[in-house]
Length: 347
Image 1 (cartoon, rainbow, N blue to C red):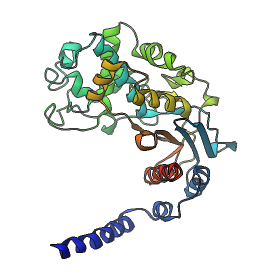
Image 2 (image 1 turned 90 degrees about the vertical axis):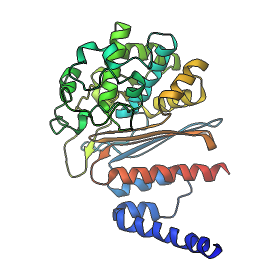
Image 3 (image 1 turned 180 degrees about the vertical axis):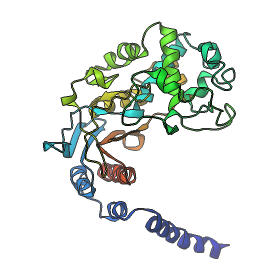
Image 4 (image 1 turned 135 degrees about the horizontal axis):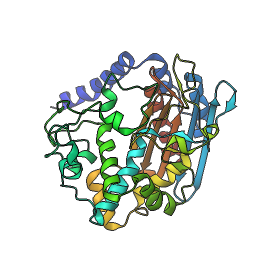
């Protein structure tokens, strides 16, 4: 038995290294294998040498105030340097705000987690399979079985729909992916439908509710529901590897993927969500039962990670304005290296 354990201790790390070498693209492997720099600033500067156009990092360690880092370009064509305070399309990080708004409405009895999609949007009962079995809770937790509209080959990534009904039409009358509640499968359609449920329940846009109940109390004056609300000159340009055009003007309007914000605003929101200062005790308990406390975001030209690290009481937000190729693998490695540096500094 002891020999077996000793064998496994030797073999498993070797297998892990082999798998990393075989399955990780070489340029990502170089990032992973490089000696860890002494500072976050060095790591951010080094990241630009790996075919990433620009990077923004926000670090908020409790008790030491926020730190901002940026490297590369905000706009590549005009050689505008990366700005850590610039606006960025935060994509699916937007889902955290919708989930928090839903928790507040459940707590005040405006919504019920176990009511169904057919209860809330009866007009869709005949065109979404299992609508009478899919609960609001399942929508929030990506356990509905409703197809993901961004998986549809007809979804126009480079000429986005201008209203959510056009988007929803991509999945209407399609068969369910699985029986409601039987498993997890991430679907942007879930949060589009939650947005519609919130709008109908409130009698006005859930975006207005999020501003009033979440953004304003936190003083988040650089967070917007839609790209159309901001001056495009304030927004970071976005690029796809191997494609020269700036994708900044592409406006994605679906709830759960449409918001624009600075890294600092996202960081302030994320800390408040995690430390209990955004939601009251009952709202926090509801939120904990329905969704996660961190998120990533991905749109053409925009990739982001927003996480709170409890062990070092630190929020780390990373924005990169390059997508495509193996860019996600690279930014995931870079993010983890930044957290390793912060942990080492906290010792």
